[in-house]
Image (cartoon, rainbow, N blue to C red):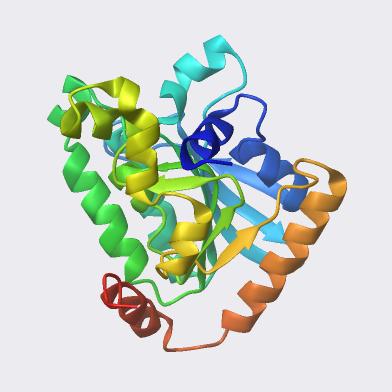
Length: 257
């Protein structure tokens, strides 16, 4: 598959969403709502659950399954109150020593006047700085699109795992093509240059693992992913150097390889 074909695959409406992963991998999920400042954002779902017998804090970006649900969830583009809800959950996880797992699928943060008026960029920055400084285990799973700061806000983790056909980029191929080539129809060319595939991310050290999609959405797929996630979280539990290791992980981005 070309890079742009992977972008299209990542955007497919048939792909499982964050709530599918939550319901098939985790148990006893209790969703929390609101940022305690403005309101609740449907694009970000979060709360408490169990990964096996490990209590964890879950934060996911959900696009929705039908038109009405997608509208209510801003098509998976979070508002500031969504990121502030995520920060609230992260700080609670820190207080009670719970690992944090994020499930990301977004074209980017919501672009609107209201979002800007309520401090979109500040909310994203606060989410990044909060997550990167957590002393508890953190794991980010990119299941579809990982667009710009809207995705990075929930991916400042100890490790980033990407599904085989997921993509991670500072801008959409169409947006990049419009800026660089003055023509959105050059999106395929832009996608190749953006180096946005899971293979690219692994090569550059931006991701640590690629999850095959041969049986995407099947019970076997979720069972295998659950086992891998549980093993990784257990390997990080009890360590007191996670924040520093996470800092070093991000510091080495951009080094010559």
